[in-house]
Image (cartoon, rainbow, N blue to C red; front, side, top):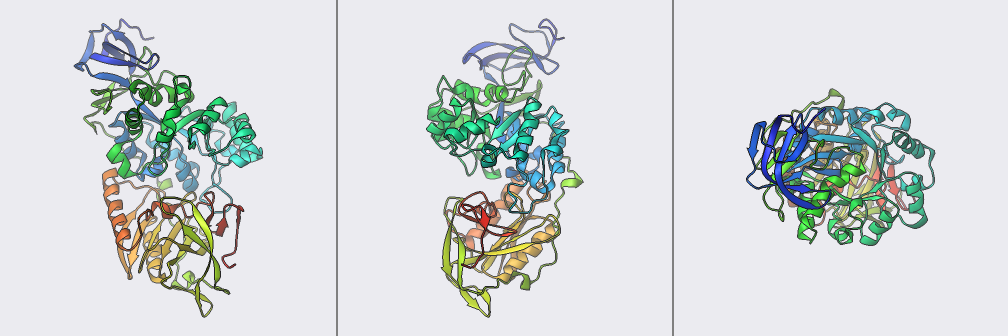
Amino acid sequence: MLKSDMKADLIIKDVKVIDVFQNEIYKGNVAVKNGKIIGIGDYEDADEIVDAKGYYLSPTMTDGHVHIESSMVSPAEFLKCLVARGVSTIIADPHEIANVCGLDGIEYIIDETKDLPAHVYVMLPSCVPCTPFETSGAILKACDYKEMINDPRVLGLGEMMDFVGTVNRSEDILEKIDLAKNSNKVVDGHAPLLSGKALDDYVLAGILTDHECSDVDEMKEKIRRGMYIQLREGTAAKNLEALIKGVTKDNISRCFFCTDDRHPQDLLKDGNVDNNVRKAIKLGMEPLDAIKMATLNPAQCYKMENSGAIAPGYVADFFLFDDLNNINAKAVFVGGKKVAEDGKVIVDFPQKLSPKVLSKMNIRDFKLEDLKLRLNSNRVHVIEMEKESLLTKKIIYDVDVKDGYFEYSDDGIRKIVVIERHTGNSSIAIGLIKGYDIKNAAVGTTIAHDSHNLVVIGDNDEDMLNVIKKIDEMSGGMAISSNGKLEGFLRLDIAGIMSSKSMTEVHEEIKKLLEKAKELGVGDGIDPFMTLGFMALPVIPDIKMTDKGLFDVNEFKHIPLEV
């Protein structure tokens, strides 16, 4: 049993302590023993004393909901970036890698992060696969989670995206929710625009959080129902500015920060939830309120005892900084050990690559003939992309047909191909898409939400086949081909969705690929790879393409290509 009169392992001397319980700042020395805080005040006896020279001392920050896979690097490499910035804890939903590797993918996230100087907690993915209208690498049911739910680092069930099934009391969904609730763990939500009695039913099922609010009215209605609201600032989805004005002294205890999905360029440039904190302050939030939303509030939501504050018995996770209005970590301590200084980690973050998640492409040897699109009519359904959006429109278009096959022309219509890569079945679906204006080239990727099959867009079959061959050779990744020549590629050796390279290396390689795709005609408002990766997700209206064919999201069924 620790006592305050023990000789401390470490004392941080002369700090301004951030009190997240009362939104106060007070001066003192912080004493640490065995990785825990044993006191704050007039402490002087320690093996090591660090003079903070009047710096602020805050609990380290927590990302309340994040998909590590969106960083496109390993968990260890991801955490190196975060810890250097004062973010030591994440609530990870390994939804993406679970769709490829099943339980092996979740176990990889848990195992690689087990001994790192950070805290990684996991929410078990609730929707694997996302829908039955695509082929994923795994199907996970409640029975598959019976042992894993008891892991102390598993805090509950991940975002329940199937809010329709939840409201309608789908048996499979209820079994998963009950598993979490019976283990006294949290169930995360995902319910954009859900309101009224449907929202009541969603909360009645046991859903506690939501990160999909788009305006203050939606946020307030959900808080009234007892939900926690995560203010998100990701790469594509940014809701913080719209919601921050709805956070008040009366409801702030139900609000905290998350990033959801954040790509390498944004992580390297602006960081993780430390960016949320700085942005909230710039938008007028009191600094201590912003810090509270990044520390104590997520800890209380997810029942992380003795975490998220500076107090006796709490884990000695804290960081030092000098400017309350522009918070940047000068030194970071995890478990009472200094792990980062001046924005760089000073300890190792070793990777533990499991053979079970190494990328593989289980597809047949495709030929040019496989990419031909047979048509009996020239009137077809076409996916029309929208700029700066993942939404698409279903349009009817008259295309050129020659000898019973689709004929490319200069009308802006491109082929989109989705190839199932997990089971060996190699099912292939070919559709038509407008708005991805690549010329004399093709682009492909195995980051294709949510089942992460291979998706390729091009204006000629030769380059499309070249991309398919290269990605197959790499066992997963991204590639561009133009005029029969490979113009760039990135191998994603972890499940075909992440790389074991450093974040800086991945960022530089992606930057080159993006520049090349833009040179080849992909216009402003369309991210050549990110937008492409969402063209296979059959839950975002109006129309998408899976390995099973053209899918009408509004009708929630596959439809024929020909009208």
